[in-house]
Image 1 (cartoon, rainbow, N blue to C red):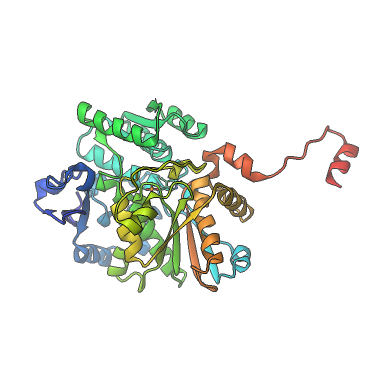
Image 2 (image 1 turned 180 degrees about the vertical axis):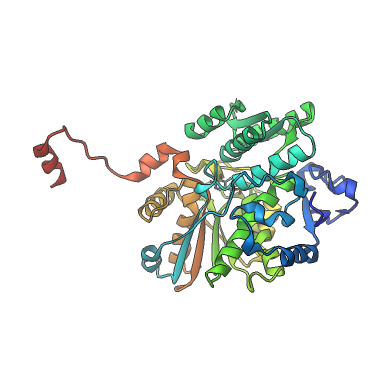
Length: 415
Ligand SMILES: *Cc1c(COP(=O)(O)O)cnc(C)c1O
């Protein structure tokens, strides 16, 4: 653990672990609340972080997410500086902003991470931590991207990875897994069933459990998305009024919020944005929980945005707390709106998978509902690349023009 880590706090009952030997076991869940509710959150000594940043300013550091190493739960000797993760570009889309009557609109293109999704932020930290604690095998259950990023980083570390995915995951994601050399277990069932099987297997076989929901180390990796937004936006002299994030388990939005709050406490930014939480129309249990303080009893539904097709979100408490704290709002988008947004993002130079385009679809919807005011500054997290799901991309893309290799024929179809 970093020497700036001070405690693990149960997000349910607030009980704390503070001794060195205790905070070194973050895969534990709170003994009082049990593994379903008693997820820990990692606390830091921000004064110590500040002192370290005074000595070695952020501006002088390499452009990847290890630049925030004091805010990660890793010993300095465990930081794999050569794994290049993060520092993804903010793509400003002026034409789209003016169409939506926004002052400025940025798409943060997380598809440029090493395995092409935001999940690389979490998996890189998870694998580095697993190595630090001497784990020999690392496992996770995933809708796809967490798995491929885990497999990619495990391959970098030379550590075996066991992956549980729903058998319905898009083929490009499965292909990545297999090429990275992971043991891939396609579970004939939902993501939730794959998740439960993975958790039991980790207990049974003593594997390191990368599942974000119970392992707070992973959320710290996702946090770097928020740290980075704050630093990059401060550098261009603006701060977004809204940040749109698509929500499945809820770890991404909670992690981004934690990063923003830390950067606010460290005075890198002077105000905090509101979070626009975006879920699929038929799969929106986190939004249900925002109103009811609990998950819906049963939720059916489906969406083509496989990465957020999560009926039983494991981290809904952290997500709901983050959205509320930011005075944020939840919006739901249909598959058709998602495909539209894939096309729109593409027409502005950003290739998004469905769950990533959902964030932009949420912005479009929130603007038309008046939730986002005219002239606002808005940032949408584009959490994964369109190459992750080429079937949906073909559906969104448009029409192919076919011709025989003949100029006359070409002229006819171009008319
Ligand atoms: C995982 C994922 C999300 C949602 O993150 P959660 O932590 O599950 O809420 C959104 N978009 C993409 C592309 C993802 O892979």
